[in-house]
Structures are given as structure tokens and as C-alpha cells.
Image 1 (tube, rainbow, N blue to C red):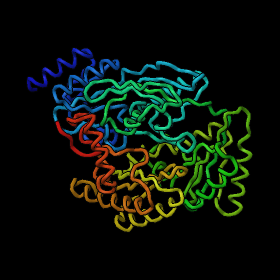
Image 2 (image 1 turned 180 degrees about the horizontal axis):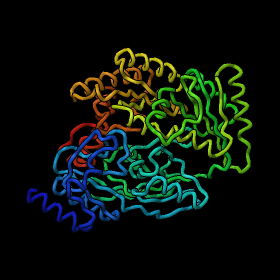
Image 3 (image 1 turned 90 degrees about the horizontal axis):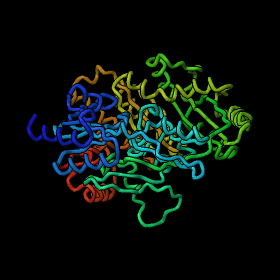
Length: 479
């Protein structure tokens, strides 16, 4: 190790303490490799500050020495946005020690938490005061709220509550020069100029490090009903959604679709998950209704809509969950898609969002084109059909992915098909996963050049030396 990096380690340890600086390559492994094991980077140090002041001091120290900074939450992202590149001079900043719930206000329906809080901890803290934080996704037991904010995470409750962006009232952010943006306000109405907090939501740590947030809470669901429907196509799911919205309105909480091929992958690769229904149709739809009132019978209106749907041929069959155990078993299938796909082969995953009216055309066209171009690909799909977000996933047997160059060409071919169809249907290539490393080339190819120019201008203004999470969204940054 050079004297420069040795001195850097000593300086970082002086700020956060020796035991909170990880310099060993072996000990760093969980922090320099992404969740999928696809990106492997290097770092001079992994630093775990214990307060906003320490985060600011670490950032200021790194900025003065032109050390690149890689903010990292729970490292559960899908696009490599939290993984350092292979340059030696990276400092990974983890906020694991910053897990305090600073304040909970049932009156204001808000919770103020530090960025290292695990999402499930935020949910539990809200539950303790008879409130509900609706962000929910498969990694909620390990992802951190700071990472959720930085990637504008979506999940299964967007249909009713919106994405993370809609759940944030205020933010505290350490800027690339070490200054602290104190926007930690719990105001429902604030029209004093630009909404600066929105710059950092979904910015993937390229504009600063979120250290704390004020989040919206809601009355908890006290009544619910859940069903699984067997369908012939996405067209039927959209018709059923329209009927449900007319019948139950905002009680429609979640609407999740899965292809049969997706569920077959889970059945084959995730042994602890049991498929509690027969696979007899091409598509499956999870419908969940919720109400904040106790004792409301939601099974009756749900059963009525489903019976009408089956009578006119929109659904082949339906399972109405009779108890909480059965409902959890159905949700377990949906929440296992990432684990199952990862175990099944090389994953070429997409996060397209298209207008609701175009979803059926998008699904049909993109599947046909991938199968024609790459016959050995197993095309599976799942998604949040109520908000237009369909995940198209091509699973490739690893025998076809031995040579890096050949794999890259294969991935590029599939990506172009999906992106072209997304654009043709008036959509966008990322609804919730973000850009990171995986999608930066795709973004450059399909985005409006003015969009890229404006984003680069903002990046240049806040981070003129390109030190904050370089290589993400736009490509390699200055050092």
C-alpha cells in the first residue's frame, strides 16, 4: 500500500475509529461485490460513520484528497449502483451504525429515521404506534431506507401509496464537499422555492449521501382480502383491474402479475417456497384489497368482481385466500422471484414501464421477439401491472455465458429488443431499479439528449470533481 493510501486510512480512522474502517481485502468482500455477484470492485477502505457529523467529516476528508466516494445501503440493488469500480482509490461509506429512529409522530403521521435503518425496522417502528409505512419489497429485511430513497424504490404498494418519492417529506443529505443539506422538515405543504429534496431521491448517491429522512405514515390496514387468479393473458388482468377500481376504488392495494414460466422457475429453484396453486394457465394475478376500518368484509366485493370476471371469461379460476397463512403463502411466491431467477441462470433483467393501455402489446411483442432472437432464453415476467411496471427477464443457461464478450453481445441484443419495444409503447426503461452500472449504456442510447445534458449540469454543479459514486448513471467520472 502506498504512503498516500496508508495516510488516508489513518485519517479516516481518526474520524470514525479504527474498528469502523475495514481495510483488509477479504473483510471488504461483502461491500465491493454486488448482490448478484456480477460487479467486483476495489476500495482503499470501507468506512462506517456513526453520525451525520462523521459522514460529513469523512466526505470532506475524501474530497480534499480526491478519493472517490461510494455510498452504500444494504447492497441489495439490482443494477450495481452501490458497487465501487476497480480503481484503487475508492472509499465505500456504509451507514449501518446510523439506525436510530429519531422521532415518530402519530399526530403528524410522520417518522424520522436515520438512513441506515433497515426497511423492516421502519415498518415495525410505525406499527408500534399503530401506523403503517407502506414501502414493501422482497429485500425489506436487509435493505436500508437510505438506499431505498437513493434508488426511489417501488415495491408492491405503489398502486395505492406511490413510490418512495411520494413517501418522503424531508431529507438530510451530506453533499459532495462535506456540507450538510438540512431539509429534514416534516411539512406537508412547503412552497418556498425549488423542491431540492427531490434531486437526491433516485439519484443513486451521485449527488450526495442521504443520512436521514422524514417519511409519511398512514393508518394501518385492518381489513384485507386477497385472491389469486388464473388468466390467459395480460389483457384479462387489465380488464379485471378496471372492474376492481370501479367496484372498490382505493381499497385496491396491490395488483401483481406473474407468468407461468416465472412461477415454474421459483418452484424449481427455491425449495422453501411452496406453490399453493396449480399451474394451468399462462398468467397469474394477485389481487389484494385493504381497508383501514376493522371488521370490513372485503371478501364479499372481491368475490363478486371475480365471479363476474369468470362468468364473462376474463379469468379461468380464482383462489380467495381464506386465512392469513394462505395469503402469506401466495405472497411468498411473488417475493421469491429475484432469488429464483438468480439461482436459475444468468439473469438479463429489465424494469420497463409503459402506459397501462400498452402493457398487453408490450408483453406480447417483447416475448415473441426475444424468443425469435435467442431461442435458448427462458423468458419470464412479473410486475406491478397496476402501475405499468412489467419486469421482462431473460434467463440464460450459464453454459452460454462462459465468454465475457459473447455474453455482452447476447445481453446487448436482448436489451435492444426490450428497449425498442418500451420506446415504441411510449414507456421508460426503468421504473424502480434505476440505472447504476447495468443500465447506463441503455440510458445513453434511448434517453432524450436534453435530459442527459440537464442531469450532467446538475451533477457538475454539485460534484464538479466527479467524486460522488463515479461511473454510475453517466459512465466513468473524473478522479
